[in-house]
Image 1 (cartoon, one colour):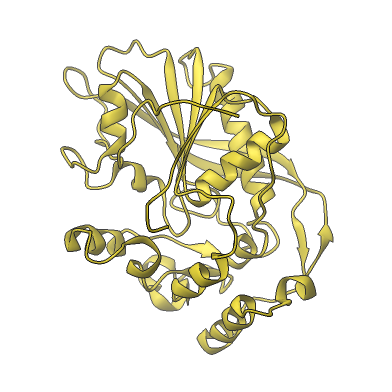
Image 2 (cartoon, rainbow, N blue to C red):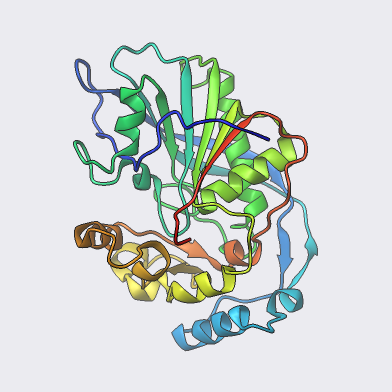
Length: 307
């Protein structure tokens, strides 16, 4: 991999309107995505209650844990079709040759990239649009307005990688109604992990890759997961997540893993708490990272000093 400076690094957000003049032109669509993947075989039922989940997370993140070894057994073939919610924005001149393909992180949805709304200094999508790039956002499988499959058997890393790959191919073929010369992948945290997975399996599918909140060092993963204060999503917020299986989880301590005291605006933490989404047990138990030996296109990595 060789390094490239970012096309537009910030924290994202854009308006959800479709307009002309000074506003970007945006279109949303729910796309049926058919994939063939190889998720792990995980012999673990959803936790019955919060006490069982807390015990499970404690076992998973302990220093001498062999929890994953005991419950993850090889891989299986999966063919499925999922509905993925997408949002494409074009700059006002509608003349973009580059589209940024953005993948959000864990316990988030696409609104990570339009955080704070129109005019917010934390709005990455507006920054990218002002730079003349198009932006393609989507809710990852299991998040936001996209399909919510089984949170252990289906909602795993390999499945999410294949969904993202099919979306890139969809864009590349001009299926959005627009043709771009370059597709640049940009990820945050777990989204960066998925982009790395795309590079491992598919080489130079993307013209360049931007990884934020990413490091190949895995020694702190257990500490990070423990700091989330994971809760059963349906119990933590019944009005928003009440229909989900107990295999879907949400974070209860946004500050510990994401905001380094005292260097953040408390209003940002409050909004992040209000807009958080879910993760799932299958997602946590299938974390994997490898070196992308067949990827030779540009890459740029941005990681916080206290990560």
